[in-house]
Length: 426
Image (cartoon, rainbow, N blue to C red; front, side, top):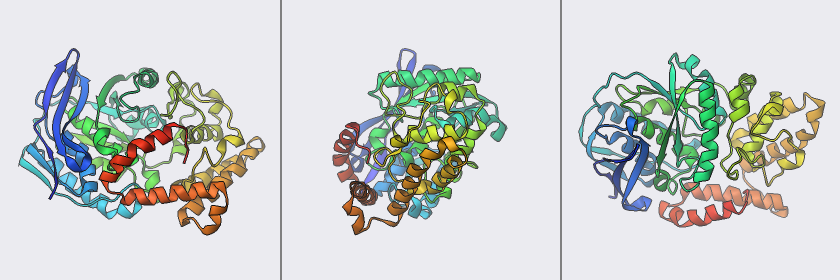
């Protein structure tokens, strides 16, 4: 049986930074002895790197491949127990997962040993600059009862490693938002997506990636805030960051807690209408050109602009356009979103409450109808229109993706990304 093997991690200093890496032999993921690495400030690097972060980072790809995870060294016993619970949860909830299929696997370690407690007590937040993490920045302390010291931005997650100029734009806003609230910023970089993208969608993989970074910095923190996406679960879709999942990345002496899982994104925007950090530094777009915070035209930008509009806050935004024209909400720009139907219905109701927003109601109703048709599956009559054909292609793509072998995904992924970069919306 194929396995994914993690060799002993090493630490290499490069000036003021440190790279912690481990050799990974994962042929099913396209890696035959390639290094998985994380780069961080030297002052936050672990003295003795552990296997825990690497086991966390590769757990979900291993579950997709059906390969056991072999660790050539010690693993935290409390973490191992939590990862067993996590696997059971993900397999049980698998029908809700539109991204991929999970299989239970075994995690084999040479022996089990807890990390040595450092006695340091500090809380950190994984911060992208979007609505969820902005809410956690403002309300995380009140929800958790912990003082928030640090925000961490991870280069290589939402912003690809090769987009250095884009990183500078996003990091400017992340740093400014943190400074407005009196927190320091830590920048971490990693090539983790080299190992995950062929196996599963980043929407499902990102929580494990954040947890891996949290464990790498675990000698300096005892608590991490993760911005939860529980509202997706309530609408029939599994996500990589939800309250039941987030807490299971914990081990003895290092706790992960969810923030904001009890309310949806619109409610978060409503609560933050008076927050300067959101109006000045909100970054939700990963397609924008270098030097621009948000493109204002992609689906993610448009959803956020509508959230701000009905909260009477769009005119105050310094990072998004102030106008949402009906023609922007076309089928090309706004693909069907069956998991968000309830959110779009609530949006339609709020738009109907003001006469000046009435022109936006028909395209939102059309989006709701597209999403309902997508949810029940395409029918022959859908092939008669351009929009219906696009919807059918996307429906088939998602169905095939969930069952596609990883080896085939690895071959298709570069071509698919090239197609996306040419401006294709479906």
